[in-house]
Amino acid sequence: MAMAMVMAMVIMRIRFSYSLRCTYKQNSLPSNMKLQLKAPFCIPYCNFISVALVFRLIFTTANLYIVFFSHQAHAISWTLNKTIQAQEIYSDNIALAPSGSQQGAFVEAINPVVMITGQSPLSNMNLNYRMQNLYNAGGNNSLNTYNQLQSSSRSTFIPNTLFLNSTSSISQQNINNNQIGASNINGSSNSSNVYTFGLTPIWTPYISNYANGSFQVNANTMATSSNASSFSNSTLTPISNTFNLAETMRLNSGTYFQRVRWNLAFNNNESYVATGKNVSYQNSSARISIPFNAYFNVFTQGGYSSTSYQSSTGTSNNGAYYTAGGQWQPSQIFSLTVGAGNNSYATVFISPMPRLTWTTTYSDNSIGTSFGQSSTATSMASTKTSASNTAATSGIGGSGNSGQNWQTALHYQAARSTWSLTHINTTTTSQQILAQNQQLVNPVTNLGPNQYIINNPILTNNVIVSTAWNLSVSFNPGKSTVTLNAYDQDYTYLNSNKNNQKVIGVSGNWSWPFASKTSLYLRPTWQTITNQGTANSEYYRATVGLNRTITPTLNGILEFQHMNKSSNMSTINELSPISGYQENRVTATLSMRF
Image (cartoon, rainbow, N blue to C red; front, side):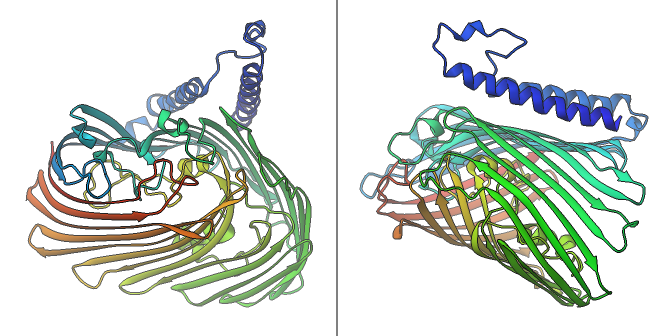
């Protein structure tokens, strides 16, 4: 069955690649020639919606097999939570107009919410859906409906060997930086519907004591509504509907190899965009390490990296890369890894106590190796488990963008607080950012999908080189809970004469249950955006609210929010320029579970 699954991966890879290439090829032909290409040689009317439908069919079939034909089907446990949410909202600047042009308005909302979870020995699924029905959003005196969905699933065909993961989402995301996060209350001129769907079959073979590996194909689609592709007053290319296909293969030496340890890796990532130039990345690498004793080993690694994308700079860093060096690990709390070559790096790992881990890497790369994926620092900081890896495996590889770069990941767990500091660098696209960053539950009300705040405020077809600092702290001194987050991010858009953007921001959340069944929360946010070295936009928002559990099935929230934005943005990164605005908003919410 494992071989059949791998063959299915390959067939899906070839068929979708050929179909999409055929479609784009036809689009470049004269209209009287397009219908001359007949199936099965190509699919003339293949588009992103049909690809998404095929994915959904595969996903549904696979999960129906797990649910209805598995001998473990009777063990599935389902949980269904149904909620109806009613809101009355008043804004004194419903259209976010400049000073002197404000208009106040009431907005009514009725939002049915469904949350479904399923768990069994072979599969699990989470689905969170909200239908947001708004009357008079943006002061338009009409009814608007917004679908919001996040779901994920994991199905096991062979335990510890063969899996199928899926993700899907429907959300509204910013197409400009008039706001930090998307809000449908002020209308849809600042946002676009974003639809994502992805399937990831995974095979993790274990070849006796000789080797173990991981082979996976990640196929996902991303589509947007017309707002994201119709603006004209920006120098940045608008985002396109995209089909992304990525194959990742890793093979590591087993316990049989005691004196020589090795691993092989291959990554191929292709993004087919509806308009503009496709983006592709391929990286192959191999590594061999030889331990001299329990404290010291030497290694050599190398590979070949190739990228293809539209760039206004005309530069490329494709080619072979190599590194040779050694690692000194005198104890489990410290290691030093140094490698020299056309890709050079040095990594220091320290863990003076079980609750503290810190990995720092400096790299000088002629060939970049971090396109479309998280850097070492990102993966190290993603979870406490990964952050507590031993020094023998921490910081290996020196992956990152080309040029000189720093990466660090620090994690500290105290008795009543958690601290995390990361600095990462990577090369990615807006489509990959949207596909990878989804959040299932609203952290304040636990009702409905939370609109994910993306600190890159522009949906664009650009390839983006990013470097980012992020500091997050959470405290639990007693009854109350405090979380703080600060970030400093630099974006360089390679398709647009290296237009650059710097985003600095701070956000926080304080929750205090000061009385029985009643809590107070405060959420401040501040962000500034700099384009081409000129401070263009500053934004802050302060939200305070009371959350009251009225009955076991009825909950009420009263919230006040103040927003202020000042800007001298021209056209480079603001699609609908607004010199500035202020808004005060009051929201009353009743939520009933049944």
